[in-house]
Structures are given as C-alpha cells and as structure tokens.
Image 1 (tube, rainbow, N blue to C red):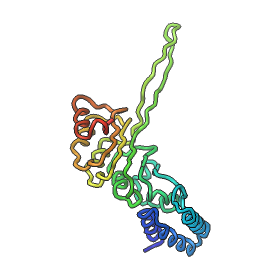
Image 2 (tube, rainbow, N blue to C red):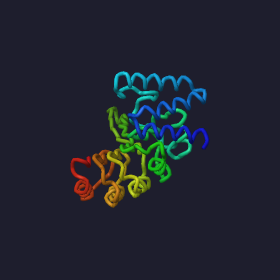
Image 3 (cartoon, rainbow, N blue to C red):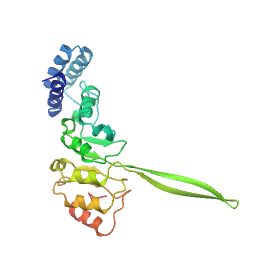
Image 4 (tube, rainbow, N blue to C red):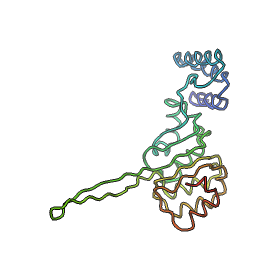
Length: 231
C-alpha cells in the first residue's frame, strides 16, 4: 500500500465514524511520522477540546468544516485527479454529503461514474447538477427609436446522455436530493428518470426551471415521486 492509499484508508475510517476521535488520533500519529507535525498537532488539540467540552460540533477536529464538494466537471472526468485533489488539498471531501458541479459540462458517463463510484463521494446523497441561467439584454435603434429586448440563455451542466447514465445506475439509489434545473433538458430526460428503478429515496427532485418538459410527463413525475418532491 503506497502513501496515498494509506492516507485514503485513514480518511475513510475517520469519516465513517465522525464522532470517534480514535481514528483521527491514529491519523495524527501517521502525519507526524510523515513530517506533517502542524496538521497532527491541530488534530490532537481539537480532539482534546472536544473531549474537554464533550462535544464534536462545531469543532473541525483537524479538518476544514464543509458539507459539500464543489468542483468543475473536468475534474470529475479524471477520477485519479479528483482523488488526488481530495487527498492533497481537500481531505474534508471524504465526509461531504453534497456535491455541486460549479462549471463545465458533463457530457458522458465517465464523470457520472466518478460521482457514483469514487471513495471520495461515498457519503454524497445530495447531488446538484443544476446549470445556470443568464438574462442577456440588448439594445438597438430603429428610425430614431430605442428598443430593448432580453433573452434567457441557459448554461447546462449535464446532457441527456449523462442523466441517462446517472439514473440507470444502482448506486443512485442513495440520493435523497437531485437538482437538474437549467440544463435545457426535455421529455427524454424526464422519461429516463421515470424508467429508473433506483431513485427510491428522493426527497427532492428539482427539474422544472430551465428545462423543456411538456404534457403529461410532468404529471407522471409527480405521480411517481410525489408533488411535494418534484419541483
């Protein structure tokens, strides 16, 4: 087992038992052996304070506080690079319950596979794949009169192919929140969601804004998941 594998094993153990200080203290010993005395000391000091005041919240206990992974789509397309980023720069990602793609586009199944199968994302239950919506206002002059018009432009994060890959995977059954707004998706994406046998734990499916859903498909989504779930 190389150093990255060992480090990952420690992080997995820590966030599998977030209220137990023992895995953190063992990790601190490992860090000290590796010459990372400052981080090791921070873990020990935070754990000491947590024990003294009999609380683990909101003390970070050696890690940055955070509940959401925020990363670009191209990083998810590189599973090794994504793992390395987490191990070296964002170890708190191993304990995050949310993931948001903040820029770029997921146009294939590879980034979806990273989301579903990476050890970094094993606790993610809230998936934000919403795109962005931008209003562009233009002016022009016709025969001495000024005119203005606006256009709503979507900046999608996921394509139909990516949505189909996501909802067809057994691993998506862990998701409780799924945000697909502003992706210019149509009824084909909605029908893929309807066909899925794995979205059984959804408490929130955000889909209406910024997509092109028509006819009875919307009613079928509400019938399957509940009107309070589908928005």
